[in-house]
Every structure is written in structure tokens, then in C-alpha cells.
Image 1 (tube, rainbow, N blue to C red):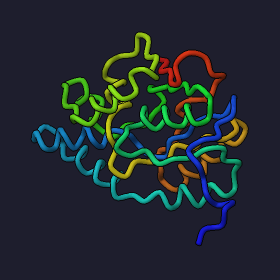
Image 2: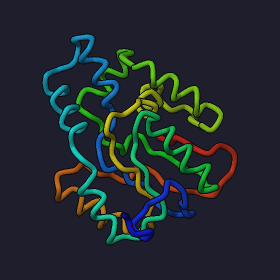
Image 3: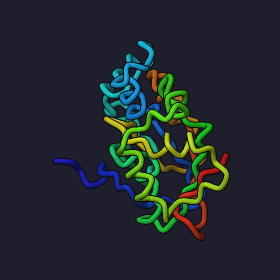
Image 4: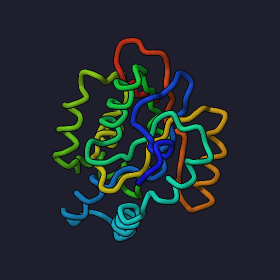
Length: 193
């Protein structure tokens, strides 16, 4: 049994919360490149390392912080999970794709068009929720990429972000602040460069 105070929900973001992603993105794209025999050995190894790394340590540290919302990033891609979190929280999530850690080669393979079919389905699913402006298509593809055993997406007060990210980096995880919750207006998710 899990104590009710230790259950984290994918809703409850508050205005001003920052969003932290605990792992690199890009496993679907890198795996597509591996299948096409176009991925470097290093990219393939990093993808395997990311997919086999448990979220256990990132989860255990959460108990020491004020977590308003949390979900794991899986087959719906980061955009899909942000859309769910924003809608359920009645908030708007602003994502900063340049601050996200990506698996080696993922950006290059996305530029080459090595995009899994699931990313297109994810992108179509969130199209009405998304405001991407002049964001490079490569980043929208990366944010739509379905993840196998992706990291946690955590919403917490900005004042606690540096400490949480620092603790994760001490454990060897390339965690980063990747966005924020802002007042709801228009689309649920905005990608800004």
C-alpha cells in the first residue's frame, strides 16, 4: 500500500511553478535511427542507458520538495503529457526546448527526418492545444517523440527548482528546468525559443 501523501498526480500545477524533466529526450528518434542503421554507437548506447535507468532515485527525492504535479513521460511524448497536465491543472505550460537535455544524436536524426510514426500521432493529438509560433520543426518533432521509460516531468515552486535539479545531477541525471506554468489563456501548451 502507498500512503495517500506519497501519491503524485499529473495535475495541480500552480502559476509560477517550474517544470523539471529528469532525463534526456529522444529515445524514439534514436531508436528509429538505430533501426535504419544510421545511429552512432554512442547514441545507441546512451539511448539504452536512458531507457534502462529507473525513475526510482528521482522519485525518492520528491518527498523532500513541494510537488504540485508529476507524471512520467512515455509514449505520448513530452507535448502530450504537458497537454494533459495543463488541461487538468487549468493552466498553460510554456516549454523551452533549448533547455531540454537530448540523447546524443537525437537533434541530428530529427533534422534528417528519422521520426517514428508515434511522434506524428502525438503531434496530431496535441495540435489544437499547441502554440508553437516559429519554433523549428525539429524541436516540435523532439517534443512529440514517444519515449520508452522516459523521465519524470515535475511541477514545483521555482524557489525549490535549483535544489531538486542539483540533487538529481549529483546522482548523474541531466535534469533541467524546461518550462513553467503560466496563467491560462489561449492554447494549453506554448513552445518558446
